[in-house]
Image 1 (tube, one colour):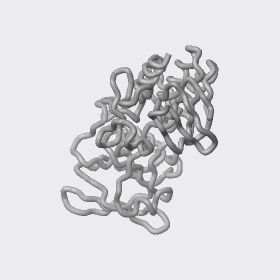
Image 2 (image 1 turned 45 degrees about the vertical axis):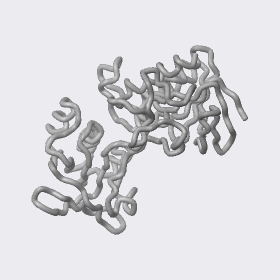
Image 3 (image 1 turned 180 degrees about the vertical axis):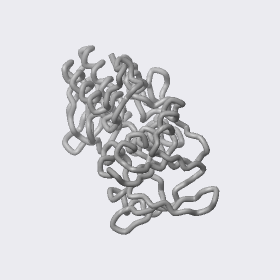
Length: 295
């Protein structure tokens, strides 16, 4: 068993900021990340509302700079997935070892939520995507759809419009949930067409996606597309925490203003916790606040 001052699970902006603050305070901080450093922010093409970058910055670059800064001050970052938590004992287990610490900061984030319709699982990776920046270039000159109405969906549609001939933005309501600036921007793009009051009921195709079945105000319709990008929210990564910590009905960790959870010495930061605004700027603030509590 390895003993550290602070264990941080997740290397997104919240986790990396927590690592930076802990390391600068002289603590032995270990970050465990089962996926890729940066988390969801690494797949964002342009971040325009993070202070200090008037012309914006791409998410991958920002994440790499955050990682380098945390490492510079002494934080250790390892590529390991946590298999089990014992929060009461401040202990967690990976395939390689067992770790314990005086404090644990949970920063596992959230993963894209599925549509849950026929054909989605079968066609995932064959026309069905959850990351426009990962797969958008594959649809150059083609027709695609984005499902969702928030900032992420709008950003995806704007990005895809630079590759695809036609982008349909499918939203179940008659108005986007995105910020006014983002909504105005995407709706002004010539090859982005919104489909209001519309839901997707199935994804169709054999070897690859060829159409969507839609439920519209005018009844069921078919829409020919070669790709669909799902942007309908996220699922917090709290499956391994069930029964150990207080969660909301939809699985987000409940914290106070100091990021403290219902378990003493355990904190939650970023997209995994219950909060009103999930942005990079709020994630880094969470990480700094939680780290301060452990010093």
